[in-house]
Amino acid sequence: MLLSLKIENIAIIESADIEFDSGLNVLTGETGAGKSIIIDSINAVLGERTSRELIRTGAQSASVTALFSGVSKATAARLSEYDIEPDEDGNILLRRTLGSDGKNTCRINGVPTNVAALRQAGHELINIHGQHDNQALMAPEKHFEFIDCIAGDADLLEEYREKFRELCSYIRERDSLRTDDSDGLRLVFLGNQVGKHRLDAKRHKAGLLEHADHKVVAQLFKAGILTGPESDDKDEAAFMRTQGFKPNAVHVGDKYYTVDWAQPAASGLMMGAAIMAELEKNPDASFADASVAAGKTALNTWIEASPVKSIEDLFSSYEGLPGGVAELVQEIPGSFIPSTVGATARTVDPVQRQTYSKGDWLGTLFGGMQAKIPGASKSLPAAYDTWGRPITRQNSTGEAAFAQFVSPGTLGNANESPIDNVILELFQDTGNNKVFPRKAGWSVTVDGESKSLTNREYSDYQREMGQMSYNIAEYLVPKFDNLTDEQKVSVLDNAYSMAKDVAENELFGADLSRTTEKRMEEASALDGTQYANWAEILFAHAIIKDVTGDKVPGTDRTISGSAKKNKIAALVDAGYSQYQAMQLYDLLNG
Image 1: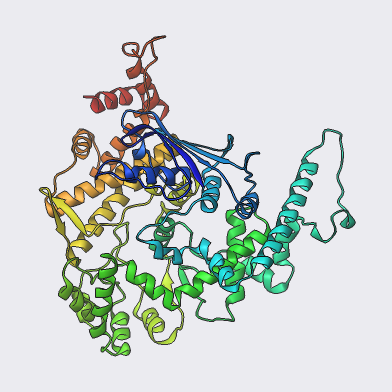
Image 2: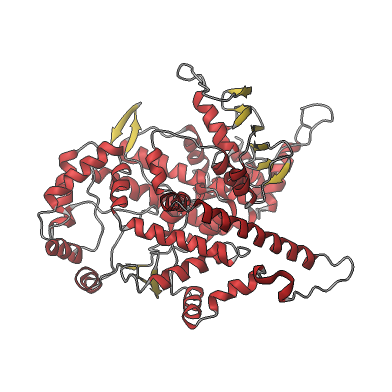
């Protein structure tokens, strides 16, 4: 159980120590008292994604410490699979410190670790229930637990875990011996030393290639011809979809063709690609771990095609469950339009159309029907991706006809921009989803009031915001060599915020933020195109943002003039001439 929780500098809480007892513990208080902050703190120490905004204003760091006691043998056994062991009293102490510079420090029982380890421990130690608990059905990491529960195979599962722990022990012993050359030993493993439990991780990874069909799968995946599953991260998966990426597909040239329809014949391709994708993402993973990941992928594929997916869609509507039910009802009239008529409409008009209008039930109903009528669909506004590009199903009428009337799979086109791979690599290095361009919201605030958007307003909003985001990012990315990863994330996030501000101002008359006004004013003093100037100002601010002067020993006072000198020097290091750096400094600090 959770025995105690210590919170420091989280939101409005400067310091709090909370002790829990067995049985029911209730936290009460009026709105704003900080109840939800306690839950946010627990989520943070359990390794969930958080942000610097959680740090109390004026503080340089925040921390959460949670002490768990009475860890059961079953839970301890599962934690041992992640090399997490309770202390001699059976307690586990989790601690996470958040820095204002974006850095995290994580510890388990005082030993430094990472956020992923906290998350693994948290999944075993505590369950947090809320009004959206039903969505746990969609969590891939829970599916094997559901299957085991239904199967009633607890004894078999425990036997497997025991063998797996024994296997991990042999691997750790082998790796320890391989790296220990203090006595100049050269280790040669013999089969009878570890018996049938011996595992050479590299050999078992290569086991994927021992059969001819597995060799083909591996070669197709490495060549980029066969794609694996979507990313586990929803933001990364959504961004890759804007590039035209399709999971479980054959990728040739700029075309994707899905193969998941060809079950069970395609299951080998899909499983093999999933294993290869896992090994590519985690080179140190064992073949067994990669196979488990592939099994989860297969289960997710079944769910996508099952009635469970329809239930999920009800809850993932723009307006929650009521909206999901309403959308289901709205689809009924459209179902009377023959499918061949709808396929013809999608053939003559390969552009995806925006049919939903927030708060306009009747308009959404007619939009959905209009999209299925040949010729009439073209009067609907286009749907745009987060770079402001129209989303097209196929590139030509011939391709569209093949996709709609002949092909049992999905045919799609690659749509990568020159900067997409840089942004994906930055996300993989940082795990920060602020690197991705933003999806437009269905409402904006104008003069203090929320305005719901029609399908046409939403389409214009996504197009303008997306195109501005890309135009600024296109100038920023070539300058990335002069920035740290944290600065890259920050400058992209600021670019997307600026694009959102300007789009809302131009389309709906919303007020610009003070920051955006200042950046535009600074950019107007530069020679160059609008987006190049915006990018230049955002880049320069990122360079000097955290540069300070030298502190007077024993005080918080800086030496007069040293901060300016250091900031100008930082701009020079970033590629500006001394004269340009001085001009930029004066402009940004004027």
